[in-house]
Image (tube, rainbow, N blue to C red):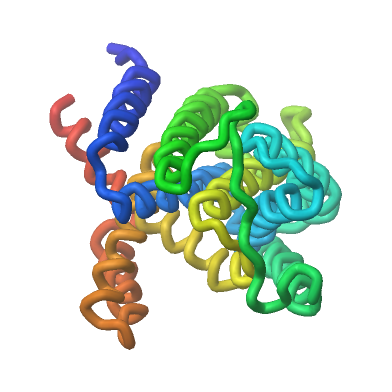
Amino acid sequence: MHRADKTPRNLCLALVVLLAAGIIMPNWLTFLATVSIAKGMVVVGLIVLMRTGLVSFGQGLYYCLGGYTVGIAGNYLGITDVVGILFLSVVVAGIVGAILGLLLCRYREIFFAMLTMAFSMILYGVLVKSDNLGSTDGFNVAHVSLFGWVPSSDGVSIVIYSLACMIAFLTAFFIHRYFQSGMGFAGDSIRENEIRVEYLGISPRRVIFYKYVLAAVVAAVGGSITALVAGHVDPEMAYWTTSGEFVFVALLGGTGHVAAAFIGAFLFELIRTVAFDLSPYTWQMILGITLLMVILFLPKGLWSLITAQRTGRG
């Protein structure tokens, strides 16, 4: 018997709960949740590629572009409206993603992964050498507004958090529908047998190109939200270790559902925060052990626990 798709309803419930929780959460948890949501959006885009059989170690490129777009827009272009800044981030990421996507859609497996990382490191190198953009230290982001209203310094965090929740909801809803569309299923088919997809008259390169641009745009929005809540940007956003974190989160949460990206991102940030507090010098080891345990016992990520529970009930 076909089960009704409950994901839209569950996403709506999650949005209401998160918005309500923002009213009572302490500032540190609001910040942690906002960063988690932002990085979860980057991971959602990464999952779009991973479902096609491609792993990008260069999503930090667009994550950084989104962040620097926020900083440049406010400090150099005089654009402080958060909606306008996010739109500008989408445009910048879309253009860069389309240009690079024309090349990257031709490559697969390790070649795709290494090329994406190479482009990200090129941006990192450019930013490090750019004295006008703060070089290795980066620079602070200007105070933002929302349709002309300028929130106070204490209230800006809850505004960014609420905006992040709503953007994440729209992104998750769209990507979920996308996975159920013909283009979404084409990605699964390319992963299983690309030659047969070509026999059906579908261009794998075109499918991968569109997915790459989509992942780029989503990553840039995540980087913009991170810059807005942190109030600072630096070249480390484009460094390969940042892109590696996104892959870590994707493996931690799993690729079975859009919600897995946000769950994995929140747990990653929580584990890192607690690990750093308990052991400032060996917190990376704790993260590594966590990933190792997930790979050994939950190779499909934490979302496989929910899937197994639903299967058992069925």
